[in-house]
Amino acid sequence: MTTNPSPVWHPFTQHGLGDAIPLISHAKDAKLYDTDGQSWIDAISSWWVTTHGHAHPCIMAAIARQTEKLDQLIFAGWTHEPAESLAAELIRITPAPLTRVFFSDSGSTSVEVALKMALGYWYNIGEARSRILVLEHSYHGDTIGTMSVGERGVYNRAWQPLLFDVDTIPFPREGMEQATLDALDAACAQKPAAFIVEPLILGAGGMLIYPAWVLAEMRAICARHGVLLIADEVMTGWGRTGTRFACDQAGVIPDIVCLSKGLTGGSLPLAVTLCIEPVYEAHYSTDRAKTFYHSSSYTANPIACAAANANLQIWRDEPVQQRIDTLADAQAAHLSLLSHDPRVANPRRLGTIAALDIVVADSGYLSSLAPRLIAFHRDHGVLLRPLGNTVYVMPPYCITPDELAHVWDAIGASLEAI
Image (cartoon, rainbow, N blue to C red):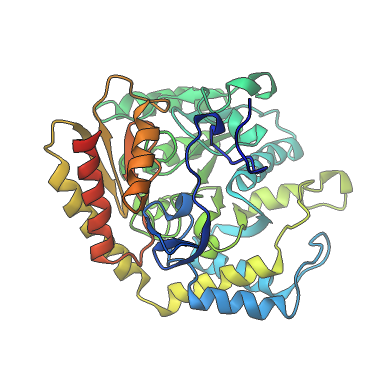
């Protein structure tokens, strides 16, 4: 029997457990508030999207201005200034070989676009390449294509009949990196279409980190075999890993890059897929059959583009990198205080992202520990959403030292209580 009084069906939520669902009325900086005045520190940036803080005045003002001029426009054969300005700035701040920007509306769709670009490239130049290589434990979204290139398991078990086959490269665990590179080299020799990776850190797969030199070697292997490299920077982009884009740390220029989440500072849904000129040229023709047939109704929504332009203005005008560096150092300091606790395993950090595993018998995504941790932290004024027994902290860059200390104090208290 269904007991949920609300008609809303929430994502990644088992309503049968009867967990409380707070009703948030407003947010500011790193905090969320309900109508009763209770507050929570948003320690995961509302699912990794909020970078500068909630309701940043620059972004809110840009949204307000845009609503008075142009709310929506079909983007097939039409354009508008916010999209043109955003595309130009994205090309300016990304490596020169990336020359084209395709708009969509979420991280998942940006990856779908990337996969279709890769397959369309080979099809249009007349080469029979359709196999996709993926990295073990990866996650790229919840649409059919993105589930196909992600880890198979509880996320997508019910929809297995819809998913296409891929070849999986083992995750480069510490000390086993060469095995990963050898496997990739052998797989690339079979002439697949593309290899898709989350650069430097696998998010939903458990905040698994691998070194920049491995990513650089992966790029070199793909280049040697003529395999397109797709970098899914949906989570890793916009400073999360310590640099604006994770690929920067490896000196890697992918053939196709997916960006979303922090693209608008986390204020509105928007995504882009950037590609190198040959991918675009393969679709450029007087033959309409070679058109890149992909769109959504809200492609390059003007209001969302205005928010993204404001985000880029913040990067230009404010000391964003300094905030990232300060947060990264603070995360490292807090993490070190728990690193020797016998209840904690594999403490790790990359840029502003810190994670640890709590030692339990039922580890993994469906660990019974996760719902108890969520409830504990909710009761202690913190929004955390562990990945099973993996606890991670990924806050907005504006979080104060006291707020961050409260988050980590709550994590320490949860070890005692749970």
